[in-house]
Length: 100
Image 1 (cartoon, one colour):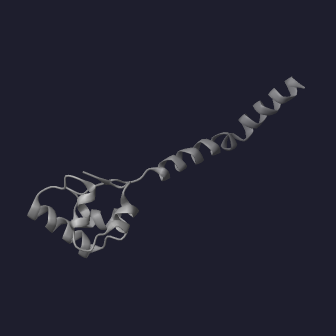
Image 2 (cartoon, helix red, strand yellow; image 1 turned 60 degrees about the vertical axis):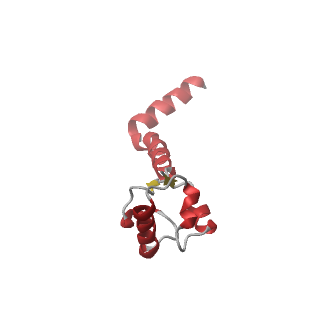
Image 3 (cartoon, one colour; image 1 turned 90 degrees about the horizontal axis):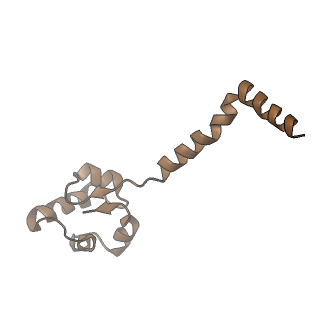
């Protein structure tokens, strides 16, 4: 029985190699999809902020940039709530995506 199992494995490896590699490709894709893009709010452009952050359109992105130009770089993520139009709900949606 053990020999039969080994022969079946070898046969399938030789004649159906895509079956052997299908799982590893799927695992790689899943790992890439799970990566979260992070945005540095002190250096990001308005386009980057809009693309990566939930609930941040071009208007709010411009306000973030204006805030940091006026007051200097953000020293905490919580400080984003000082930008007009950005509240706790928006911050909560993006907390894992924002870096300083």
